[in-house]
Image (cartoon, rainbow, N blue to C red):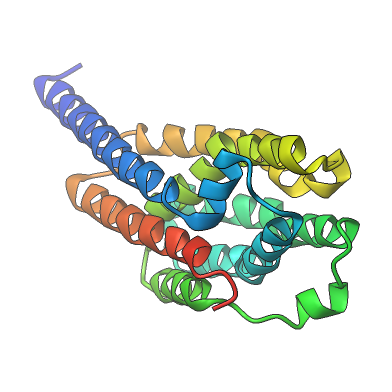
Length: 232
């Protein structure tokens, strides 16, 4: 191994380590903001209602249904030099494109109307989040969207199952009424593992790292916003 090869490897490792630290800071800020979201505060306190849960599912569905389309759009904008990222995006879009159906089944299982759910519109935060995702996905080689995946998949892996368990504790819900959240702990844990492999693979340079962190910051804020703006 030449000195230049060692130097390149060290530089890549330094970028990866710095990126991990910066994303961890974004995550901490998101956690702090989520703790102040009214519906999640009531969930933690044990004062959440079935109506709260119904509203949460209703509002999440309007954004979740856009998940696979923006990932597919991003995949189409990666060139051959970013083949690994294009492949990962295509695989991820395929895995995500039925997720909203699980959410719909949970909604109906708690007594909600499927017709009303499907006729619903995005709230202010969801409009902003989906708009940002599609806009970013239209860029050439939208590597920064790895930051969006860090936030969205991280929430599924680290928070969704806990939310589901707490809703069950407080409201006495059955597994078939919280399946969407339960499912994402396992599925998104796999996704975050794949994401971490990309982020530490050495293919992310300093410029891409900056884009990833900035995208993570924006998506973290907009995701929290959609939870703050239920029904608005």
